[in-house]
Image (cartoon, rainbow, N blue to C red; front, side, top):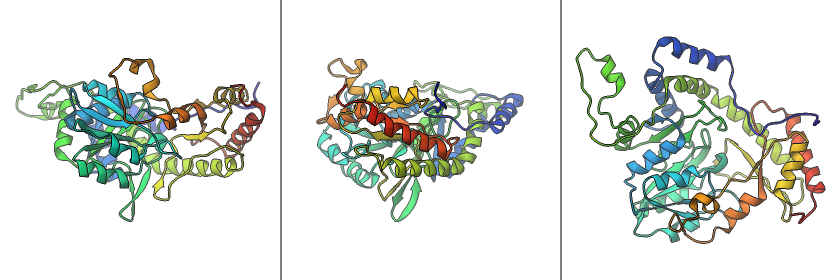
Length: 392
């Protein structure tokens, strides 16, 4: 039996979230309503965006973002294969084709140099993914999108609270750098509502579109109809979706958002300790922050030395009570994308494939102690010794 058990992640939830849910339950209004509206206002203020629209999850947020951008049948959307499959799936929902480009040489984000060569007359949008909480190089990508008149969407599922240096100031991901940013509140993320998502934008037309389509295309929201002293009949002028967030989720999200500065400070402290300890291990490559980025360290993903078997290392660590996850997946090698025409490759995806098979995510969560981090680092060092090369 291992001396301790360390999960890969653990949400920060306690009696404050319980009380928030209790308050909503007793209010009698549990679906999209006043708590959602307050959560949207507070989230917009936190990231520095004019508009924030809450939805059921980040996948639905990406879908609505693409619809607002006018993406449809026959269009192409440039993105990375090296992301959770939801990024590519949202493009397919619109009848468009994902165009996969490779990631950067020393990280897990899209390589800006690969984007320009993938642009064609059919390119309608670009989705960049702030992978594992590390910001993309928006300073290089935004001007490229503007030059070509292409809508730029940020898949910021992992990046709430992450920051970039923008025009000399530190600004949070979700401020209006690109056209639309999409966030996730899944339990693996830094802030959770059980599930849920948010879109931020500076474009009021986009925001109106999100709000219309998330509620079946209903022209008069429930909150307006129920609060009116006159009878109002809504209409449904276009096909919409049931992509709403509940007030139960939003109430929990408001508590989580209030916790966020302390959560990020704790995660950054643990990430810095990991980097200090792991930099001493020969051949192991810890993640690094560019001088223009501050990660929230949603996940801490290391690249293993060449020739070391990923699965064997993970099993050795699991035997020692340490849970890990493999590197970020690649959509283009999944069976769902095996059929011809499901995607187009904008070039070699070799870096993406290598990253999936040579990287692992280590435990990182607020409740971890410094001793836990030291234990993980020590056991990883020992695992790399114990796992023979090319047992592989």
